[in-house]
Amino acid sequence: MDPIRNPYAPGAGQRPPELAGRGEQLAHFDVVLERVARNRPERSLILTGLRGVGKTVLLNALRGQAVRARWGTGKLEARPDQTLRRPLGAALHMAVRELGHPDTDQLLGEIRAFIERDAKPGAKLAERWNPGIRVPATKGRADSGDIEIDLVELFTDLGGLASDMGVGVGVFIDEMQDLGPGDVSALCAACHEISQQRLPLIVIGAGLPHLPALLSASKSYSERLFSYQNIDRLDRDEADKALRVPAQDEDADWGADALDAMYEATGGYPYFIQAYGKAVWDVAAASPITADDVRMGTPEAESELAVGFFGSRFERATPAERDYLRAMADLGIDDAEVSSSEVAASLGRKPQSLSPARDALMKKGLIYSSERGKIAFTVPHFGRYLRSQP
Image 1: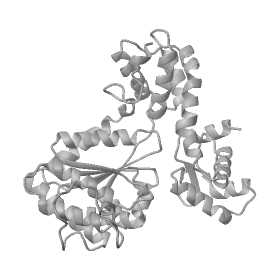
Image 2: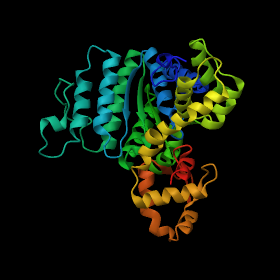
Image 3: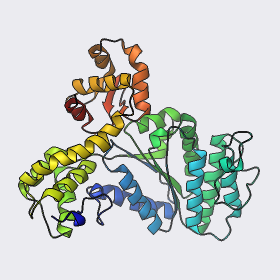
Image 4: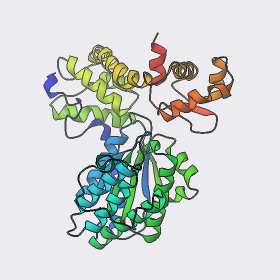
């Protein structure tokens, strides 16, 4: 096959494999947009799932739906080393620009004031604000220094502007589990307030499987604020479609034996489907692609994943944390969750002595806890990768 026309290369094609099997989520969000546009009550949306299931791609697709509905939208990616004010302020600035209202100076001044409260005393101008908003910061609104008060005020005013225009606002947050506890609490409080006022502003977040637990721990009423959707790997039919549709766009196809081999190798995870699809396409000589082609392309795909997907994450762990990960891999069957006490026993340690390593791995997004005492990898096939390493 022509590698230049490889439909599985990152960014290639008009239908990324990660979107296969997500029709239910896309249709649901169309309903959300319509309900909000008609001033009907609607909850914000949280997408959860492991790494590699295509949450970010789906989040971008949902944002595209909102843009086509003429909503104002803004997106940010949460980081554990960054507070919420600056990235959220930039996202809201983008949403205001997309709304295109002729008189937004007051609101832009509020956004600027909201961001500048993040600056430490004596900070230089460049550290307080990046150029973009030309109006001066307002006083007395969204500038109290209490993130919860400020965010409630800012969301209320932005939602009010959108309501006056007959449209909505969508705030899209990726890696939402990396928000600090205070920022999560403020976000829940703001969503609660705009829900009470029935304003057309919703938050659409994406994060790891333990994100609902973080939200629940922050505010007792969070389960009423959000609609949770678990994004999982693709079933066999959708995985086959993710491979066949891009190939058919290039006048090629996959044989039944090749599809069997690909599902066994990828487990139906969209990121793996794209990685293996790219490698196999490059080695296949003709259509239909065969199981032999899959066997030939597998080493290249696994090599690329070992460096960019698995290895880069493993390198972030300290030696003690790597021992913890390897113990999890040895205990877990098909990367199933294991108990933290079993990990401690396998390492000959007391569970309490391993708490720092476990907590650090959770903060780094390498493992998560679905329930007390249980842990699992956030990365599919990570245990299999570790067991294959010397």
